[in-house]
Length: 223
Image (cartoon, rainbow, N blue to C red):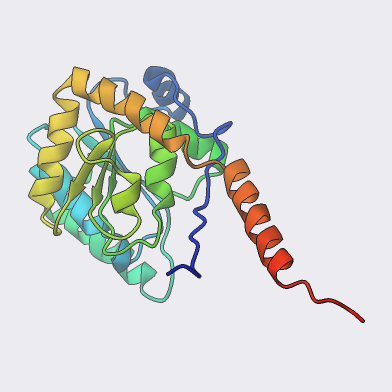
């Protein structure tokens, strides 16, 4: 363990930063009213989009919507997209789920700011960049308690972590956030502040120090 050092990636805080939710929704052509849940990522079985869709169905808010920003990825991606669309239709959610193609970073930041909650129901995550980007924009995250998400999400303070894959658990936590403006506001502030620990400048500085240390240890005297 003393020979292993983990250097996390960062986020561009010039792009991913808190902003006015109403303005973000207007810029994206979204309705101003009603809770907006957000899923960002590749559409493949690993990412758990089906859980996000079922969470919307379980949420006791008929005015809630889900935006899915991303596209199919990998050999299983197209089939997974078809499967999820079938789930959407089967649950009668076609009018409440919007699929959006992958977005450039500047546009993606607007989606984070427009959302009330970002859902990250991945089966596994080595880090969880989506959760970090959402937090940097001041959007509370409800995420699977796996991998790097356990570090990025401070349970009860910047969002919630879900043990297991029960959509009802995601719905309950999302409902707690959208139903309590005070809690949502506190989480937004805490999430943005915590995300400040992850900056590309910090990542670069740690890598420089690491390589400098390794280089110093590896110096060989030439005779």
